[in-house]
Length: 486
Image 1 (spheres, one colour):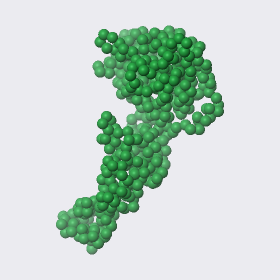
Image 2: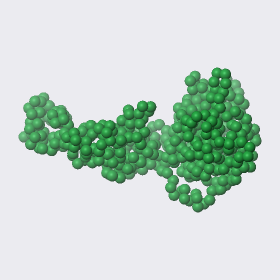
Image 3: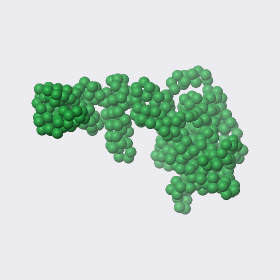
Image 4: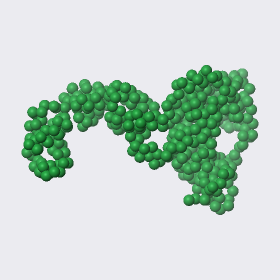
């Protein structure tokens, strides 16, 4: 065991899924031509005034309620003053000492899960959640830098954890769980490639079995969840080497170079007083009424781990299936819609988690085909499982039907009818085929009669082959046993 303990706190910036910016009516569409979505308010031209976007406040409060945060009845916006080319105002509107949410906790799962049992769970404590506006984007070229103010004013929540994480893997688990909760709450898509979720990691080390925090280093430029884990792992090694060699650790921001796998110093770290926070004189305090809060509380989303526990308990679904369905709200809703039509959760969940996701993955040009573009609807899955249960088709034929459903969008019953795939239950015809198979395969017949039960499977396979998979397996089994014992 190392003599040093790592302590990690994460600051996560999340873009809220609003149609307009936090203080203006400008659009928040991704991928627009540079500087086409920055209005006069966003760049603080003289004479303009910001107006609070109530939907942004609603989303922040919904997420706070979902994770058990305290919702402050009164919060204020402050100006965070500093100069940087991507910030046209020379200040950022944020919240400082009076945020919209205090506290809260995020449930995480560490490795160690099995097919039917979740891994170790614990809850990571949060310090605060506050609202703020985003800044612009700089693109650095060889001899110049370009600035795009389209993102300026985009609504964000900043989620600040306590120093309550102790390894790169815990940080990875926290960000994964946090992302799933945000998506489940419907407040962000959390697409890191589009800058909708960004993270800074505060990392320090201290002698094991002590409580005082070490010197904190903030890692910037962490653009993926895996990058956060890798950047923290490097920084732990760097700080440990420094402490072992009696070198000082400076409190500073460091940039993570993902290509080379190391961090480099950026500048000396500012403290809160360096930003000269003061209440924004153009914005009134945000007041949350009890009525509004009560109404939001009634419709809170079910968080992924809660949904997973419910699926495992109510539907007896295995961990491997629920861990696929539950983090994706659209996939879970798809499952529940099919289940409402035909109450066979295990069979329906298996088709979704295995066949549907496999074909969606194969069909997309750049990643998986979105579920909403899929031709297979929940009613199709429910009908397919029903056809198997009724004995109209075998599980083997169902695979063929599913492929046709995915390609054409036709209902399974229509496909079975058009292709003549309905299982044969004509016992006279099947008995004749079974007799032929028994005559043609003396070795498994001998083995079965000698007491080797599995030998009958070879005979079943031959019957299924002769009927092109259309024979009812239960009837085949009964006929073969009758003929072999007779």
